Length: 304
Image 1 (cartoon, rainbow, N blue to C red):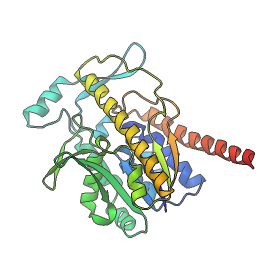
Image 2: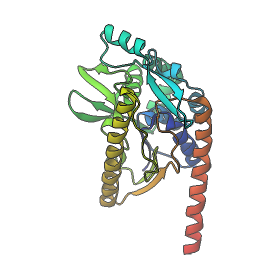
Image 3: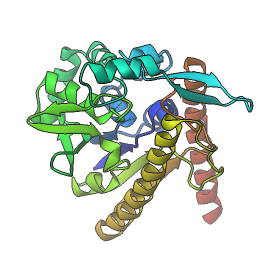
Image 4: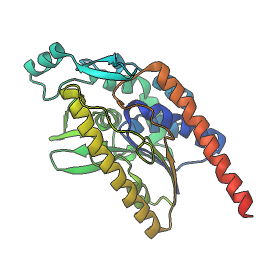
């Protein structure tokens, strides 16, 4: 069994889409299992359907308005030319006054998911031999859960994709089945072990982060910047732990891991959705996967 795992990473999912496109269209990898976390969960259904052009169009045209019905921050350029987020005080206050537990709301993303993944596409995928699995964090039970398309109906599946992508406290906190749920990345941002536990013997893993740290984060300018830096710190720790556990599981089960990291730092804030940059990142992901596989083939030829 061959599996494709795509990590969380917000807007950097565009790079992951480019990598996946090369693996599927150029290398002709036929995956039995797709597992995604957060932005990875947004990609995998269409990758499994082989509707890559459709999901590429979505990823390279998405904006803040496509995600947020109430965006809690604005975007501005700092003196170094980097995009930074600043608090939209009126929208945050409005959200709290109406009883929300988060700074912003991402209900537009839920609508976008349902418009993008139709019920007919869901049915076709559910009836196929492929399995598509979404990672979510159950905050009430302090547990990571994996939702297979085989076990749920259409509306629930759209909900789980949305929930997997809700990076609280900036996005919506969702109550479902009596529990509070949030972004799958808070528990399993790179679910390699889950793929192996489900029987995968070859796992291609797209990790939307560099293999080593190339930069020190800039000092926080406001509470949002501080929260963003804190979240990124925790996610980095979780990511490294997930990869280490995944490698250990692969060694015990004689599974092969192929890891695709981002070769450079794409952005320091993956909550910013810039159409031009995401279009470039998709192309970069495709080209990076091509280069990486060319280098691997050259090494194999030298060994022979």
